[in-house]
Amino acid sequence: MKVLFAAAEGAPLYKVGGLGDVAYALPQALHRLGVDIRVVLPYYSRLIPDDYRAQTKDVAHFTLQFGQRNVYVGIKTLMLGEVPVYLIDNEEFFGRDYLYGSWDDGGRFGFFQMALIEMLQVIDWIPDVIHVNDWHTAMVPVLLKDKYQWIAPYQQIKTQLTIHNLQFQGEFPPSVLDDVFGIGRQYFNDDGFAQNGAVNYMKGGINFADIVSTVSPSYAQEIQTPAMGERLDGTLRKNAGKLAGILNGIDTTLYNPATDPTIASTYDAADLTGKARDKAALQNRMQLPISDDPVFGMVTRLTRQKGVDLLLNQLENFLLHQPVQVVILGTGDADLEGELLALADRFAGQLAVQLRFDEQLARQIYAGADFFMMPSAFEPSGLAQMMAMRYGTIPIVHETGGLRDSVQPFDPNTGSGTGLSFYDYRPEVLGTMLAMGADLYVNHFADYQQLQQQAMQADFSWDKASAAYLAHYQSLMR
Image 1 (spheres, rainbow, N blue to C red):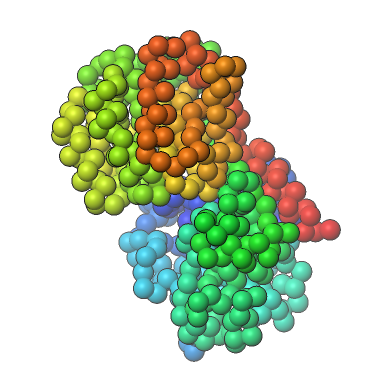
Image 2 (cartoon, one colour):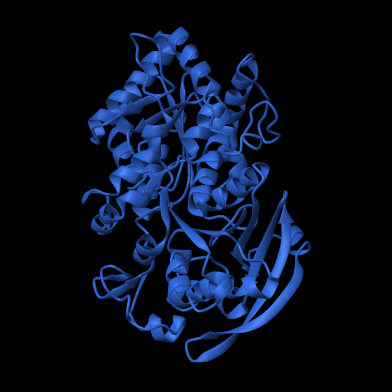
């Protein structure tokens, strides 16, 4: 079976969010299952690390019609692990210092989608399935059934769209139909890609893809409701028969406390003595007193979606009344950053805040903290809670999306569970869960240790998810 996996970002070349992790790890796992899988990404010439740039080889170049003009398409390739990766090169669209957020994103990613389709004839490799991800590639199923439907080799290609975050939909003026794609308006309606008078790339993908998946079973249900459907809940309900949720995994080789070179001391579930040294190293790095007090960590975008406002509502009271330390790493909304810094000044010695992205420090928080806070308002899948559990750090999560599917709530009566979770999304409920965590660690340490063991034994490898995706592809071949 031949599969082309299309995404706007992919680790380790360039990554903004969870999509980048998935675009690397899932194809590797599918390759291990025997799938002839190849990845296609844009070639962000200013962002690709030099060591990977040196590995790229030129494969071909051609021109495609972009609106009323012909534009250059370069195809480069390199190997990531066992998987070939194609890179679509065009300096006008991708020679920038950023991935997203430009006024012409509709054109940039419209070009990318046409280029990856037209590339297939040039490289003489026609996949059975094109697996597209989020709005940046969601128009591929539309284009295959409209602009390119007359090309015989393309007529048998099936498509799967994975929605990583429905909040981002790629909505652009109707002029993109002429100025970018060169297609008519026959599908500019509710059954196509029209939404509020605009062209909605995500909606087009939902309506035209053969299978639509999301990154957790709970999120697949949630986005069919008006509360979480981001105005596309009706479209998703209409397509419910082809909608499924598959929980993401993590790279358990990369995120492994027994071998992680970025942490102070390695350890495993059988011998956790190294974790105590990692805690002390984290406290030292964050300029907190070396202490047995429980450390509550957070690695996140500092936004309301991630529940940072909920945490801020409770943080002062938590620090005043509990013998705890709190470590927060991330960047985001300026007002939330300011509030955190002000609290860190007041509670020096208890609260440490680093306003940046630092992968090494993130790993040291996963390893050195005792609890990991993730009170997201919504979370399609979430990866950080899985990484925390892998390192024996107990997650405290809001029961939504992938958090609900990956964290089993602790039951103090039976001792079962892998973390602490709450359903009612109110600040005082989060405050209660934080206090429960502190009490568990300080007064019921044996129960905490049992929870820690259960969290570390949870399987978040890509094996289960990749098998589910393979089953989807196989169903399309019948």
